Amino acid sequence: MTPVLPCRPVTVLAFVGDRSRPFVARVLAALVDGMNGSGPGPSPLECVFLAGHAGVSTDAGQTISGFNPNAGGLPAWQVMQGLQSGEGFPGIVTDDTGVFTAASQHGLAVEAFDVPLPEPAFQLFVAALGRERQNSQYSYGLPDGDGDCNCITWIERLGLPLLSGRMDEFIALPGRGSHPSRRFGRCS
Amino acid sequence: MTSDSSPRPDVARQLGVLAMRFRRTRDETSRRAIATEYAQEVQRLIETGDWSEAPAFEDQLPLEWMPEAFFAYWCPDAAPRSTAKK
Image (cartoon, rainbow over all chains, first blue to last red; front, side, top):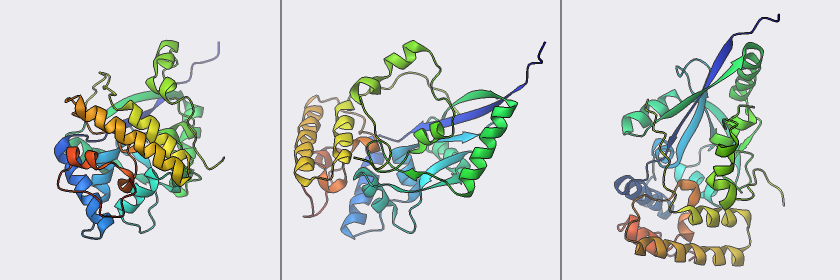
């Protein structure tokens, strides 16, 4: 009999953005100030709290890597505006452990689930993640924008399944019907 | 970390559909038409009297394309200056 290899879990973590009125009002006001030139705009962390984020960990959440737009010195409000306009930005993979900790402290529910992989597949994932940390090959963008992926679909680019594989779950996905196509990447 | 598996209501789903359509085109006329539809949907949500969760970041248009009613509802103290394209 072939011995069964032990599994190693990749943990997927995510939080939905803060959509509460007080927070949205504060960040919207800061975004408008930034656009009007009457203020610095929101901080990058406030933007992440507004947008939500996803990341992966290969050490049970001790270190969480996330895919982000590389602003290249642009203020956060300008990046937000660009993304909402459909622009793509160079992608960068960073250690976002602190972002998830801060999100939790902010009161956002950080969801997590494991994807156990056989050791060889786990090592391939770790290697791919390492290459991405060095220099991501993907650009960042929102669905139907010019970027290759966002923080969620980047995880799929790494080959990690985000769905359970249950047909009922797949068919019941609300976005399947309301978003019958979803472009990532610049094409016509 | 918490694990809340309850499904989130998606009352603003149509806004997401429109935001994706907006990003799909660079044509100013098309974008203006989408922004008009977006404003109508924002108005509908406001009139429900029960719009308690702001749309997701990716379900919003760029600030200068957002309807004034959106700012009046979510952030009365802020609205983009005259560069607004609505």
